Image 1: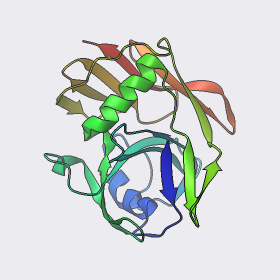
Image 2: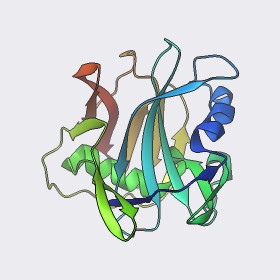
Image 3: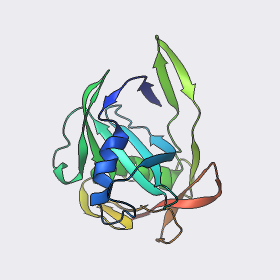
Image 4: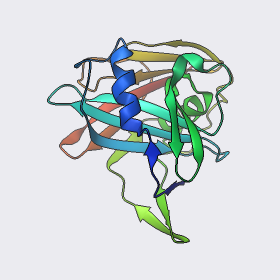
Amino acid sequence: MALLHRAEMHPTKFALLAAWLPTQAWYQGPAAPDLASVAAYRFDDPAGAVGVETLLVRVGDGPIHQVPLTYRGAPLDGGDDFLVGTTEHSVLGRRWVYDACGDPVYAATLAAAVLADTGQAEVFFEVDGRREHREPTMAIAGSGPRGADVPAVGTLREVVGDDLTLIVTDSVELAVVRRLDGGTASEGAVLTGTWSGQPTPLPLAYARCR
């Protein structure tokens, strides 16, 4: 379960992304993008400490980019190379926003989604002491058997940022599709997604045990 607050962020996550995305080798678009939200999904951090959200964004009629992010209340040790930026959250205070491909919490939750089909987190808003459910904007499915045992990912050994971003951990290799245009693929179990205007499942990520 992901519990969100009706709050303001300064700068917003999209303002951070507009500055960060053009610095990435896998990005295709203008240097000053006007980002449009397509859909999003979240994973649940079992420890409840890290927000894990993946955004699908587009600039004009260009390709849809998949951008996994993690939100932390303190800097990620060794995560400087993956920092997207910091923002002030009106409820939670300062948040450190990271490219999730460099965050071990994301690696663990993504591995579970692909290899054990754990799905996305249910999202609720906290409103005046009440929880209001928010309908998902997309559906995801992992090809691994639901409830399968997933090895602990351990340490992130290597992250190779490319059209297919490779995340190598102690026990699992993950590959995240950055541009959802059908041009990249990998081996192993696969996480697919559908959303409004995209009824045919598209690969989002792959995983295989080492």
